[in-house]
Length: 257
Ligand code: 6PG
Image (tube, rainbow, N blue to C red):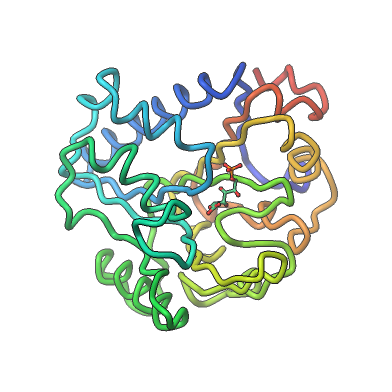
């Protein structure tokens, strides 16, 4: 992130378990606050492996009772173009670990229909689902209470990969994105939609992320190469919860502890 002009917080915790615990506490706090104020909590789940520990905790006896699940509305930040029961599906991961274990009405789960053959049609449909839920007019960007994000070791987040067309999408909230290096399409929320959120939390764990995290947070501002640098909330909170291994190359990272 360019020094100084992005208000973001970095919380360094010992390891992946502590990262999941801290993320669970943040999830519960934001959920309870949102539901108290407006009777609902809208959250975008991240894919990948890092958030699995968080989802497991939320479904556990320690946390399950703390969340008024019928008032929680789940969306996804991105999805692979596979069936919803595929092992690669972000929806399937969250469903198995969390959604099937808490009393969520099925109409509260807004799965990204990335398994549809027509990716453009699927992303337009998902955008319409989001807009209808939020009752927004075309030019207004919906505002989620919480968006969870991961970061790849190439600096991508959601399915906003370096040098891909989706990085330049300024109008749409959801888009299909062809990832050349993977040779496949994915669906992803766009930068304008993500940056409209009230709370954005990155969950980043492991030594493999240390070099790119240093680049993203302390290096030159080059978001086309490091798409996580595009994430700058318009009017919200940006929190990085990272473990010591991922933070190990940050300058004086101890000051974040
Ligand atoms: C996905 C994610 C992706 C993920 C990062 C980090 O669909 O894979 O949305 O952006 O968050 O690649 O993945 P890990 O948590 O597995 O390191």
